[in-house]
Amino acid sequence: MSFQVTVLPSGRVYSVDDDETLLGAAIRQGIGLPYGCKDGACGSCKSKLVEGKVTHGEHQSKALSDEEEAQGFVLTCCARPHTDCTVEARTVPGAGEFPVLKLPSRVLTIEKPAADVAVVRLQLPANQQLQYRAGQYVEFILRDGARRSYSMANAPSRLGTPPAIELHIRHMPGGKFTDHVFGALKEKDILRMEGPFGSFFLREDSDKPILLLASGTGFAPIKAIIERLQDEGITRPVHLYWGARARADLYLHDWAEQAAAAMPSLTYIPVLSEARAEDGWTGRTGFVHQAAMADFPDLSHHQVYACGAPIMVESAQRDFVAQCKLPTEEFYADAFTSEADKHAA
Image (spheres, one colour):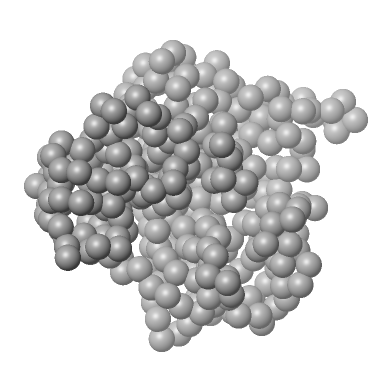
């Protein structure tokens, strides 16, 4: 049995099979619904159920509260329909443009610019062309069927020869995948992956100034977006705020400085939350989103792209909208939810 889902205001209609979520079926059919984690943890896919009935799978209350559910909101990533449905959701042009592929990849290089960060380059198969938008991610399929998500850190125009994607992987001690990356993974190993996924990428139909906000390895998709801006000759004013605990955690600080030097439209502001005197740090300190707010008390005419720890993304969205007049629809985010985050109460 399948059900018909109508998306408003676009009027797009698609079908959902018995065993599918609203989002899973949309991705399969190239319908560009907004989403991030696909695990009921981030809330990026929250939409309004106008008509019909759904059942929610496991999800976090911070992504969808009981009150919101009572008001008719749903998380399309974990909602399964029981009837035909009408859902109110902004469609994302380009989100379903490229086919989702399952493909093998071969480890080309592994570099560690910080003690707990690996920059891994993965060679793509010659007979399958992975197309994606800068900012999107792939999922690794582990031997037990578990999945782990990582954003491409290079723009699709910078795959190189042989074509390869770049990923920034932070070590989470005890993590099933990252323990392997930091302990056993070596050049020429094969990893299975699927993608592209995600609705986090540059909205190129706008001419608004851009605020890029990253924490930790949330810098990865932000780096890909900067490369996209460079390659397309987009000259919208861009301010990049990259937050980390200590200077060593700004693992591609030199790259960011060089990008800003090469792009007159790009300004780079690193921010440390635990700056130490012995590091000789003379730059900005504190929480990264608060540094941006100090510089931009009025964001009413900006677009914001935020990526990194869920607490940073949530704080930025809340405070930018409430205090800096950022239009809600101009905040685009990808919260890096770990497995521990996804299973938190």
